[in-house]
Image (cartoon, rainbow, N blue to C red; front, side):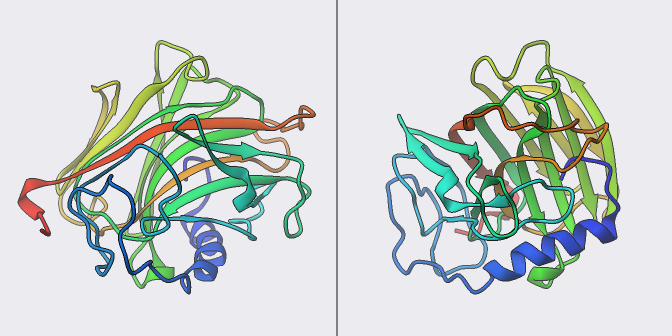
Length: 267
């Protein structure tokens, strides 16, 4: 995820949570009408568009019962995910979960997605100590090298977008983009286009940063898609200290879209 953490520590944190979820099977039937080119029987998914008419358990999993590591001040709680007015709501609450006094929300895909264009329309949360993020990840828990593409909005300054990527365990971090607007005030579209030799991050369809590289210098492996809203632990320069405001904080996602690269279509 976005932030100043070592690759080895990040792998350990991911392994703790994700290994617990690997036993969760896929639904046999593909539910809903949002699937465009996807099969419930394959590890790797194709193009789709999700508008959150309801929870689609054939595509998504609600994370529940663990924390990704000590940098988090909460544990994932499936009660902190809801569909409200056609939007996915991800909340931080004071409901205890596991060893944590606070709980937070993660919605993650069952299948792995490869090269192509990823976009999400969302509204972040403005509050010290929290982050709203969209990530694409695979790693040792799934028998892969650690590859990750991430974009996040820290609640301490919701006019900034933080972007990063990891290629075969080597992190490339700390790119901060001035959005020119407050991401907590209204919905905007954030995304990235992933090709073998470049990743281009976009905001409302506009390119804001491009990373280029040779094979092996950029992520190469299909990964799961993660929608997250969580609070940090302690007082860090990255997120600042989180103090629960006495009521839930909620980030919202209106839709998510993946368009598979034409050169690598599975279907």
